[in-house]
Image (cartoon, rainbow, N blue to C red; front, side):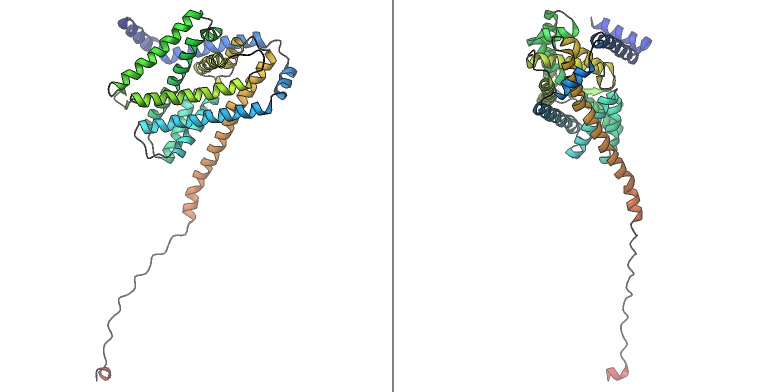
Length: 352
């Protein structure tokens, strides 16, 4: 089995290229999502969608905004945890918070978050803390690992408890999804034990990274879970009142839709995330559900994106004017050395 997997990996890497496989998967997901959206929204009534948005409870809207803010606050600890993992304890939290918030909010909206978010991280860390490209690459890897560990934990537990929620998205049999969830949780346990039994390194000759040990891995998983739970709770608050849906089922559907949007590499998972949510939640009124999704995009994508652009713009402006301020400062004139006083000669009259 291992030999067969290695042969497949070697063939794809040499003959096709994994990046082409990734692009093909992303395009396929997008095309399927566009078909689902067309079929679902062809008879939608925009006026009813606008009416549903106006009828949104203000207290629920504010609570959802606070939950999304808590989720983005948790995202800042992705970078802080990564910095501590690579040994850069000298970088303060404010720098990690700015890099984490701006990189994720811009990366989520621009698409291809690995590259777009990584570029934002490098700009902030290189100018604020003198971090190298390799340092930033390590931070991106650890932050991405935190994201995936959290997703595996939430999705695995949710699929084990409510596999029918995952079946609403992937259309697989309920028993298959339940075993997939159990397998994901088992893999997470095995990984945690593996990193606990010794120092585990990842990377090649160019750079090597020591993976977090057992206790730190548990902390890593906890950070990812809190982030996802905040976002899923915000989506739960924005959902229509009727028919009712339990939180775990919605969390499974939400995380599954998010991962599909991430795999498509479209900006903000646009089209893919929405199609997955609409397909899995057919029991809700179309206009009301679409209203909830639009409010979700406003709070989770548009608002943080605008704030991050404002923060980056102000920061770049300050960095540009700093050299000018330094150049305009008048140079201090060097102090003249006081001449040594020569001893006075005593006159004859004085000595007399």
